[in-house]
Amino acid sequence: MNTFYLIVPPHFEELALAELEEKWAIHFPEKTYQVLEKVLGGILIQTELALGCYLNKILKIPTRILLRWQEIKCRDFPTIYQKVLKLNWYEITGHPEIDFKITVHECRLMHTGRIEETFVKAYKDYQKKFPLKKTWEKEGWSTPTVFIRGQQDIFTISLDLSGEALYKRERPLVKHQATLRENFAAGLFYFALKHLDKKDNLFVADPMCGSGTFLWESSNFYRFSKRTYAYEHSPLYKIVQQSAKPRIESTLTSKIVGRDQNSTLIENLKTEWVDLDIPQLWETEDASSPESHPDIDLVLCNPPYDERIKLSMTYSELVVHLKRKYPNALIGVLMSVMKKNHEKAKLNPKTKLSFSNSGIDVEFYLF
Image (cartoon, rainbow, N blue to C red; front, side, top):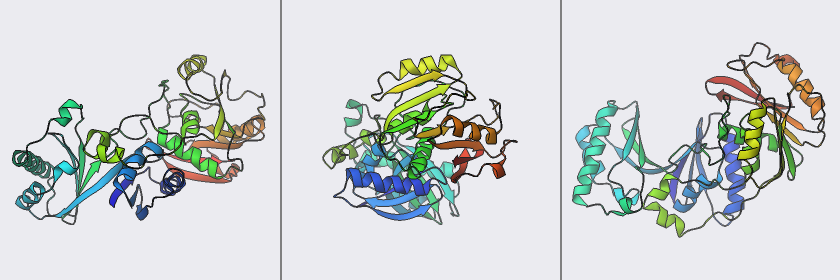
């Protein structure tokens, strides 16, 4: 068994645990995992190596997944060097370079630069003792990232299995100045899904769709993420390929509807999303339009925070309007806490989730 640390957006921990439980039952029903710890911004689990690596492909809420590899206790730099030199580095990496990321807290050794130099020297000397094969060069492996976390003189060594942050999906990129990060959008879709009576064949709409992040995550929450990951550039990949793989991919969303007042944006979305294999409707329409859409099951909306783009109505007015416009839908609206016309007392939501989006305190309300 191996230990993995799932980095998740703060305050999304319960949603991430629920996603892990649900998708594990879908893909690995005959296998087991154990939750060791849940803290703000992270979840520690234990399971088989291959399954921990494959979580990169099936989970949408985490930001990054680390393999907790080794722990060493050190109070001086010579001891760090000797202990690092003795580690079996080729278990996790076959590259001549490692990008070390160092953090320390309550340690005797606080100089992160010198800690990094000591790790680099020990790894170089390790390669002199055990010459490295050229597999990394033939297969074009990228430089691995290893996180070193020192706390109370215990240094935890973790291999980054993800590479680029997991919210960086492979999807058509339609630029918009108020884009919501993908794993936030995935988490908010899942949060809404937990409060929605209907669980399949969903019609999902975003009346201020921007680059379409909410709609993309709604369509792909139960599909595999199709991109490369850091563990595929390491000796771990052969072990992973020989073991259990995810079983199926699916979607609960049967139709997406994107509306925005920016006609150029809508035309770009029509063009760029043509390969998405579910029905799509893209319309140029102002959010204040009175036209009713009773066929929609779920509305997800990220209106302007008045930071760069202005909202022409108060949040209360927007909610009342969306309820009229989408009379049969569960409506989710992401709101800035700092916006002057927040008017919390008048909203009366069913539930909410509070977090920080790009440094702005926000609340996602369901109505």
